[in-house]
Image (cartoon, rainbow, N blue to C red; front, side):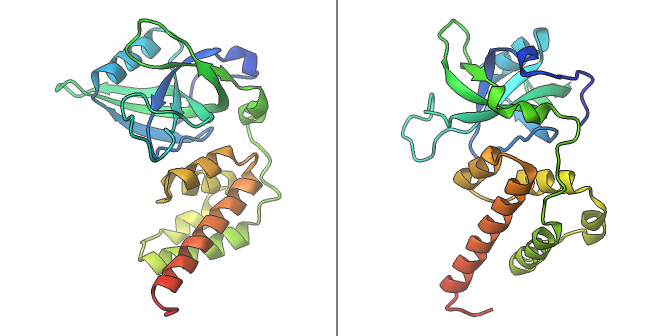
Length: 221
């Protein structure tokens, strides 16, 4: 989902950003993440964002925690801009975030808001703001070969005609965001420094999962 607002430099992004901790949710720069918002504190967060810079920090909680209200968070998230918004009539918001730039969480700021607010450092990920990051070093053939084997192994229906036509960068990001992997794997995909590395991480995770399936099945193919 394209955004009307272009950010050319990390200094244009806010140093404080509302945080939306959501396990298993992966937002990447230029990616689109639909959200169904219903908890009061996150409804308030959306209201706040709509009246300010429309930016939300998507970030995952660390896994295996007992505190589900204010869990500890991973150190890297992604700022997303609200590019679609609708009210449902039953108290929910339907929102689409478009990824802008990843950030390192430098801590949280206290205040009277019902939602969490983080101090964000975007400098490490300034390359996310490029119009078209370099994807020329991506091994597209290896990525597609692994995707085909993974889809066949798991009986996933794939529109291969669309996949083959998709630009490499869009394909990598779409595969990463839609992948059925766990929180740790999603975080590794988020933190990959560039498209080529993200493609390699995708391949490696899929290969590990397929190897585990084979071992669990006694080596049967």
